[in-house]
Length: 371
Image 1 (cartoon, rainbow, N blue to C red):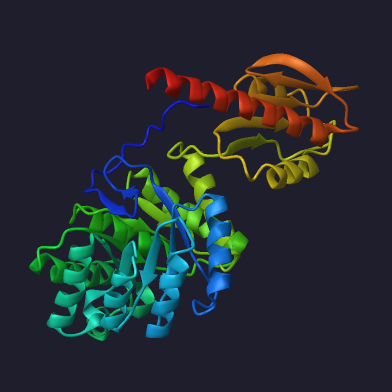
Image 2 (cartoon, rainbow, N blue to C red):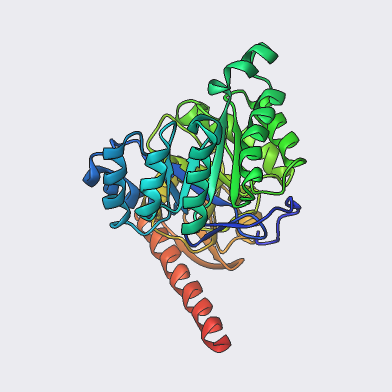
Protein backbone atom coordinates (compact mmCIF):
# COMPACT_ATOMS: atom_id res chain seq x y z
CA UNK A 1 0.00 0.00 0.00
CA UNK A 2 2.99 2.32 0.52
CA UNK A 3 4.53 1.95 -2.94
CA UNK A 4 5.31 5.28 -4.63
CA UNK A 5 2.90 6.88 -7.03
CA UNK A 6 3.57 6.14 -10.71
CA UNK A 7 2.61 9.73 -11.57
CA UNK A 8 5.45 11.83 -12.98
CA UNK A 9 4.85 15.39 -11.91
CA UNK A 10 5.40 18.39 -14.17
CA UNK A 11 8.61 20.23 -13.36
CA UNK A 12 7.87 23.68 -12.00
CA UNK A 13 9.59 26.57 -10.30
CA UNK A 14 9.30 26.51 -6.50
CA UNK A 15 7.91 29.40 -4.49
CA UNK A 16 7.18 29.69 -0.77
CA UNK A 17 3.89 30.65 0.83
CA UNK A 18 5.14 31.38 4.32
CA UNK A 19 7.12 28.29 5.18
CA UNK A 20 5.17 26.05 2.79
CA UNK A 21 6.98 25.23 -0.47
CA UNK A 22 4.78 25.17 -3.56
CA UNK A 23 6.09 23.64 -6.76
CA UNK A 24 9.36 21.92 -7.53
CA UNK A 25 9.58 18.63 -5.67
CA UNK A 26 7.42 19.81 -2.75
CA UNK A 27 4.34 17.81 -1.77
CA UNK A 28 1.11 19.09 -3.29
CA UNK A 29 -0.30 21.44 -0.68
CA UNK A 30 -3.98 21.49 0.28
CA UNK A 31 -5.78 24.71 1.03
CA UNK A 32 -9.19 26.16 1.74
CA UNK A 33 -10.78 29.58 2.21
CA UNK A 34 -12.61 31.06 5.15
CA UNK A 35 -16.29 31.90 4.71
CA UNK A 36 -16.68 33.98 7.86
CA UNK A 37 -16.90 37.78 7.82
CA UNK A 38 -13.25 38.85 7.93
CA UNK A 39 -14.23 41.78 10.14
CA UNK A 40 -15.30 39.21 12.76
CA UNK A 41 -11.79 38.42 13.91
CA UNK A 42 -12.75 35.86 16.55
CA UNK A 43 -14.97 33.84 14.20
CA UNK A 44 -12.37 33.90 11.44
CA UNK A 45 -9.56 32.85 13.76
CA UNK A 46 -11.72 30.02 15.12
CA UNK A 47 -12.42 28.76 11.61
CA UNK A 48 -8.77 28.97 10.58
CA UNK A 49 -7.78 26.94 13.65
CA UNK A 50 -10.33 24.29 12.68
CA UNK A 51 -8.78 24.20 9.23
CA UNK A 52 -5.31 23.92 10.78
CA UNK A 53 -6.50 21.00 12.90
CA UNK A 54 -7.86 19.32 9.76
CA UNK A 55 -4.41 19.57 8.15
CA UNK A 56 -4.71 22.67 5.95
CA UNK A 57 -1.33 23.75 4.58
CA UNK A 58 -2.54 27.19 3.47
CA UNK A 59 -5.69 29.23 4.15
CA UNK A 60 -7.07 32.08 2.03
CA UNK A 61 -8.97 34.99 3.54
CA UNK A 62 -11.05 37.54 1.61
CA UNK A 63 -9.95 41.13 2.21
CA UNK A 64 -12.52 43.31 0.40
CA UNK A 65 -11.87 46.64 2.15
CA UNK A 66 -9.33 48.50 4.25
CA UNK A 67 -11.15 47.68 7.49
CA UNK A 68 -10.87 44.02 6.54
CA UNK A 69 -7.15 44.56 5.94
CA UNK A 70 -6.73 45.78 9.53
CA UNK A 71 -8.76 42.81 10.76
CA UNK A 72 -6.55 40.53 8.66
CA UNK A 73 -3.51 41.84 10.53
CA UNK A 74 -5.08 40.86 13.87
CA UNK A 75 -6.08 37.47 12.49
CA UNK A 76 -2.56 36.81 11.20
CA UNK A 77 -1.11 37.33 14.68
CA UNK A 78 -3.27 34.56 16.14
CA UNK A 79 -2.72 31.65 13.72
CA UNK A 80 0.22 29.58 12.53
CA UNK A 81 -0.87 28.44 9.06
CA UNK A 82 0.22 30.65 6.12
CA UNK A 83 -2.49 33.08 5.02
CA UNK A 84 -3.30 34.28 1.50
CA UNK A 85 -5.13 37.59 1.16
CA UNK A 86 -7.78 37.60 -1.57
CA UNK A 87 -7.84 41.10 -3.05
CA UNK A 88 -9.56 42.71 -6.01
CA UNK A 89 -9.49 46.21 -7.50
CA UNK A 90 -8.02 48.28 -4.62
CA UNK A 91 -4.24 48.04 -4.76
CA UNK A 92 -3.89 49.92 -1.45
CA UNK A 93 -5.37 46.91 0.36
CA UNK A 94 -2.58 44.76 -1.06
CA UNK A 95 0.01 47.28 0.11
CA UNK A 96 -1.47 47.29 3.62
CA UNK A 97 -1.64 43.52 4.10
CA UNK A 98 1.92 43.29 2.80
CA UNK A 99 2.88 45.48 5.75
CA UNK A 100 0.85 43.27 8.09
CA UNK A 101 2.66 40.04 7.22
CA UNK A 102 0.54 38.35 4.56
CA UNK A 103 2.12 35.19 3.15
CA UNK A 104 0.72 35.48 -0.40
CA UNK A 105 -1.34 37.97 -2.39
CA UNK A 106 -4.17 36.68 -4.57
CA UNK A 107 -4.72 39.36 -7.20
CA UNK A 108 -5.28 39.82 -10.90
CA UNK A 109 -2.84 42.53 -12.03
CA UNK A 110 -5.29 43.47 -14.78
CA UNK A 111 -8.01 44.58 -12.36
CA UNK A 112 -5.65 46.50 -10.07
CA UNK A 113 -5.66 49.34 -12.58
CA UNK A 114 -2.87 51.58 -13.84
CA UNK A 115 0.65 50.31 -14.42
CA UNK A 116 2.06 52.29 -11.49
CA UNK A 117 -0.40 50.56 -9.15
CA UNK A 118 0.68 47.13 -10.35
CA UNK A 119 4.28 48.26 -9.99
CA UNK A 120 3.64 49.35 -6.39
CA UNK A 121 2.04 46.01 -5.47
CA UNK A 122 4.86 44.04 -7.07
CA UNK A 123 7.44 46.19 -5.29
CA UNK A 124 5.74 45.52 -1.95
CA UNK A 125 5.65 41.79 -2.71
CA UNK A 126 9.32 41.78 -3.73
CA UNK A 127 10.46 43.79 -0.71
CA UNK A 128 8.59 41.55 1.74
CA UNK A 129 9.32 38.20 0.06
CA UNK A 130 5.65 37.64 -0.75
CA UNK A 131 4.55 35.56 -3.75
CA UNK A 132 1.52 36.42 -5.86
CA UNK A 133 -1.26 34.16 -7.04
CA UNK A 134 -2.84 35.08 -10.35
CA UNK A 135 -6.40 33.78 -10.23
CA UNK A 136 -8.38 33.57 -13.47
CA UNK A 137 -12.03 32.52 -13.30
CA UNK A 138 -14.40 31.69 -16.15
CA UNK A 139 -17.10 33.73 -14.46
CA UNK A 140 -15.13 36.99 -14.45
CA UNK A 141 -13.24 37.15 -17.74
CA UNK A 142 -12.37 40.55 -19.18
CA UNK A 143 -15.13 42.04 -21.34
CA UNK A 144 -13.00 42.13 -24.49
CA UNK A 145 -12.21 38.44 -24.11
CA UNK A 146 -15.92 37.72 -23.68
CA UNK A 147 -16.56 39.55 -26.95
CA UNK A 148 -13.64 37.86 -28.70
CA UNK A 149 -14.59 34.29 -27.75
CA UNK A 150 -18.34 34.74 -27.32
CA UNK A 151 -18.30 32.62 -24.19
CA UNK A 152 -15.78 31.29 -21.69
CA UNK A 153 -13.42 28.81 -23.34
CA UNK A 154 -10.10 27.21 -22.33
CA UNK A 155 -8.34 29.52 -24.78
CA UNK A 156 -10.00 32.58 -23.21
CA UNK A 157 -8.91 31.50 -19.73
CA UNK A 158 -5.33 30.98 -20.86
CA UNK A 159 -5.20 34.27 -22.75
CA UNK A 160 -6.45 36.07 -19.65
CA UNK A 161 -3.83 34.35 -17.52
CA UNK A 162 -1.03 35.22 -19.94
CA UNK A 163 -2.10 38.87 -19.89
CA UNK A 164 -1.74 38.98 -16.13
CA UNK A 165 1.53 37.07 -16.30
CA UNK A 166 2.85 39.62 -18.79
CA UNK A 167 2.37 42.36 -16.18
CA UNK A 168 4.65 40.48 -13.79
CA UNK A 169 7.15 39.48 -16.45
CA UNK A 170 7.62 43.12 -17.48
CA UNK A 171 8.51 43.87 -13.87
CA UNK A 172 10.85 40.86 -13.71
CA UNK A 173 8.78 39.26 -10.92
CA UNK A 174 8.74 35.47 -11.12
CA UNK A 175 7.49 34.47 -7.66
CA UNK A 176 3.94 33.63 -8.59
CA UNK A 177 1.51 30.78 -9.12
CA UNK A 178 -1.48 30.68 -11.43
CA UNK A 179 -4.99 29.23 -11.50
CA UNK A 180 -7.42 29.03 -14.43
CA UNK A 181 -10.62 27.83 -12.83
CA UNK A 182 -13.97 27.02 -14.36
CA UNK A 183 -17.07 25.24 -13.07
CA UNK A 184 -17.06 23.12 -16.23
CA UNK A 185 -14.70 20.19 -15.80
CA UNK A 186 -13.69 19.93 -19.46
CA UNK A 187 -12.99 23.65 -19.74
CA UNK A 188 -10.86 23.76 -16.60
CA UNK A 189 -8.87 20.65 -17.50
CA UNK A 190 -8.18 21.89 -21.03
CA UNK A 191 -7.11 25.33 -19.77
CA UNK A 192 -4.70 23.90 -17.19
CA UNK A 193 -3.20 21.52 -19.74
CA UNK A 194 -2.60 24.40 -22.15
CA UNK A 195 -1.14 26.70 -19.48
CA UNK A 196 1.14 23.96 -18.12
CA UNK A 197 3.00 24.00 -21.43
CA UNK A 198 3.46 27.77 -21.48
CA UNK A 199 4.92 28.66 -18.08
CA UNK A 200 7.26 27.17 -15.49
CA UNK A 201 5.52 28.59 -12.44
CA UNK A 202 3.49 26.37 -10.10
CA UNK A 203 -0.20 25.83 -10.79
CA UNK A 204 -3.00 26.16 -8.25
CA UNK A 205 -5.72 23.66 -9.17
CA UNK A 206 -9.43 24.01 -8.66
CA UNK A 207 -12.83 23.42 -10.19
CA UNK A 208 -14.54 26.62 -9.14
CA UNK A 209 -18.12 26.69 -7.82
CA UNK A 210 -18.13 22.91 -8.04
CA UNK A 211 -21.32 22.44 -6.01
CA UNK A 212 -22.39 21.01 -2.67
CA UNK A 213 -20.54 18.43 -0.61
CA UNK A 214 -21.49 15.39 -2.69
CA UNK A 215 -21.77 16.83 -6.20
CA UNK A 216 -18.81 19.16 -5.69
CA UNK A 217 -16.64 16.34 -4.41
CA UNK A 218 -17.47 14.21 -7.44
CA UNK A 219 -16.89 17.02 -9.94
CA UNK A 220 -13.65 18.12 -8.29
CA UNK A 221 -12.35 14.57 -7.99
CA UNK A 222 -12.91 13.93 -11.69
CA UNK A 223 -11.46 17.24 -12.90
CA UNK A 224 -8.54 17.50 -10.50
CA UNK A 225 -7.92 13.77 -10.75
CA UNK A 226 -7.44 14.06 -14.52
CA UNK A 227 -4.91 16.84 -14.04
CA UNK A 228 -3.09 15.18 -11.17
CA UNK A 229 -2.80 11.99 -13.21
CA UNK A 230 -1.11 14.13 -15.88
CA UNK A 231 1.36 15.32 -13.26
CA UNK A 232 -0.14 18.82 -13.33
CA UNK A 233 -0.73 20.72 -10.09
CA UNK A 234 1.33 21.99 -7.16
CA UNK A 235 -1.38 23.14 -4.76
CA UNK A 236 -5.14 22.67 -4.79
CA UNK A 237 -8.41 23.76 -3.33
CA UNK A 238 -11.57 21.68 -3.54
CA UNK A 239 -14.30 24.34 -3.77
CA UNK A 240 -17.44 23.13 -2.00
CA UNK A 241 -20.64 24.78 -0.84
CA UNK A 242 -19.99 23.16 2.52
CA UNK A 243 -17.96 23.57 5.70
CA UNK A 244 -14.42 24.53 4.54
CA UNK A 245 -13.03 21.73 6.71
CA UNK A 246 -14.66 19.30 4.28
CA UNK A 247 -12.56 20.82 1.48
CA UNK A 248 -9.40 19.85 3.33
CA UNK A 249 -10.64 16.32 3.99
CA UNK A 250 -11.62 15.76 0.36
CA UNK A 251 -8.36 17.24 -0.90
CA UNK A 252 -6.25 14.92 1.22
CA UNK A 253 -8.37 11.91 0.34
CA UNK A 254 -7.90 12.76 -3.32
CA UNK A 255 -4.12 12.96 -2.98
CA UNK A 256 -3.95 9.81 -0.86
CA UNK A 257 -5.90 7.85 -3.46
CA UNK A 258 -3.26 8.80 -6.07
CA UNK A 259 -0.39 8.21 -3.61
CA UNK A 260 0.66 11.83 -3.98
CA UNK A 261 0.34 12.77 -0.32
CA UNK A 262 0.52 10.67 2.80
CA UNK A 263 -1.20 12.03 5.88
CA UNK A 264 -3.67 10.38 8.22
CA UNK A 265 -5.44 7.05 7.93
CA UNK A 266 -6.07 5.51 4.54
CA UNK A 267 -9.23 3.47 5.02
CA UNK A 268 -10.03 0.52 2.78
CA UNK A 269 -13.63 -0.54 3.36
CA UNK A 270 -16.16 -2.71 1.59
CA UNK A 271 -19.57 -1.26 0.65
CA UNK A 272 -21.19 -3.97 2.82
CA UNK A 273 -23.60 -6.70 1.71
CA UNK A 274 -25.62 -9.55 3.19
CA UNK A 275 -22.39 -11.47 3.91
CA UNK A 276 -21.20 -8.92 6.46
CA UNK A 277 -20.73 -10.12 10.00
CA UNK A 278 -20.77 -6.64 11.56
CA UNK A 279 -22.17 -3.21 10.70
CA UNK A 280 -19.54 -2.05 8.23
CA UNK A 281 -21.14 1.33 7.46
CA UNK A 282 -21.72 2.21 11.11
CA UNK A 283 -18.21 1.08 12.03
CA UNK A 284 -16.62 3.17 9.27
CA UNK A 285 -18.64 6.28 10.11
CA UNK A 286 -17.63 6.03 13.75
CA UNK A 287 -13.96 5.36 13.02
CA UNK A 288 -13.62 8.24 10.56
CA UNK A 289 -15.15 10.62 13.09
CA UNK A 290 -13.14 9.36 16.05
CA UNK A 291 -9.78 9.21 14.27
CA UNK A 292 -9.80 12.56 12.46
CA UNK A 293 -7.03 13.81 14.75
CA UNK A 294 -4.51 11.22 13.51
CA UNK A 295 -2.04 12.58 10.96
CA UNK A 296 0.35 9.60 10.89
CA UNK A 297 0.07 7.53 7.71
CA UNK A 298 -1.65 4.22 8.37
CA UNK A 299 -3.52 1.77 6.15
CA UNK A 300 -6.61 0.32 7.84
CA UNK A 301 -8.92 -2.13 6.09
CA UNK A 302 -12.46 -2.78 7.31
CA UNK A 303 -14.06 -5.68 5.44
CA UNK A 304 -17.31 -7.30 6.53
CA UNK A 305 -16.64 -10.93 5.52
CA UNK A 306 -13.93 -13.45 4.72
CA UNK A 307 -14.18 -13.22 0.92
CA UNK A 308 -11.89 -10.21 0.46
CA UNK A 309 -11.10 -9.46 4.09
CA UNK A 310 -7.93 -11.53 4.58
CA UNK A 311 -6.40 -10.39 1.29
CA UNK A 312 -6.92 -6.71 2.10
CA UNK A 313 -5.85 -7.19 5.73
CA UNK A 314 -2.55 -8.77 4.75
CA UNK A 315 -1.66 -5.59 2.83
CA UNK A 316 -2.70 -3.19 5.63
CA UNK A 317 -1.13 -2.03 8.87
CA UNK A 318 -4.34 -3.10 10.61
CA UNK A 319 -7.10 -5.10 8.98
CA UNK A 320 -10.49 -6.17 10.29
CA UNK A 321 -12.17 -9.18 8.68
CA UNK A 322 -15.72 -10.13 9.59
CA UNK A 323 -16.11 -13.64 10.92
CA UNK A 324 -18.45 -15.82 12.94
CA UNK A 325 -18.61 -16.05 15.89
CA UNK A 326 -15.76 -13.47 16.16
CA UNK A 327 -14.06 -11.02 13.82
CA UNK A 328 -10.37 -11.43 13.06
CA UNK A 329 -7.87 -8.55 13.27
CA UNK A 330 -4.62 -8.64 11.33
CA UNK A 331 -1.69 -6.45 12.39
CA UNK A 332 1.16 -5.97 9.92
CA UNK A 333 -0.39 -8.61 7.72
CA UNK A 334 -0.57 -11.35 10.35
CA UNK A 335 -3.54 -12.65 12.39
CA UNK A 336 -3.27 -10.97 15.79
CA UNK A 337 -6.51 -11.05 17.78
CA UNK A 338 -10.25 -11.64 17.62
CA UNK A 339 -12.94 -9.09 18.45
CA UNK A 340 -16.61 -9.54 19.24
CA UNK A 341 -19.26 -7.18 17.95
CA UNK A 342 -20.13 -6.01 21.46
CA UNK A 343 -17.30 -3.45 21.72
CA UNK A 344 -15.97 -3.65 18.18
CA UNK A 345 -15.52 0.06 17.49
CA UNK A 346 -13.93 0.81 20.88
CA UNK A 347 -11.56 -2.13 20.60
CA UNK A 348 -10.59 -1.36 17.03
CA UNK A 349 -9.97 2.30 17.85
CA UNK A 350 -7.70 1.24 20.71
CA UNK A 351 -5.68 -1.06 18.44
CA UNK A 352 -5.34 1.63 15.77
CA UNK A 353 -4.13 4.22 18.27
CA UNK A 354 -1.65 1.75 19.72
CA UNK A 355 -0.31 1.12 16.22
CA UNK A 356 -0.04 4.86 15.59
CA UNK A 357 1.97 5.36 18.79
CA UNK A 358 4.24 2.45 17.84
CA UNK A 359 4.80 3.88 14.36
CA UNK A 360 5.46 7.39 15.66
CA UNK A 361 7.98 6.05 18.20
CA UNK A 362 9.78 4.10 15.48
CA UNK A 363 9.95 7.22 13.29
CA UNK A 364 11.34 9.27 16.18
CA UNK A 365 14.03 6.66 16.80
CA UNK A 366 15.09 6.87 13.16
CA UNK A 367 15.29 10.66 13.41
CA UNK A 368 17.27 10.44 16.67
CA UNK A 369 19.79 8.00 15.17
CA UNK A 370 20.29 10.29 12.20
CA UNK A 371 20.80 13.41 14.32
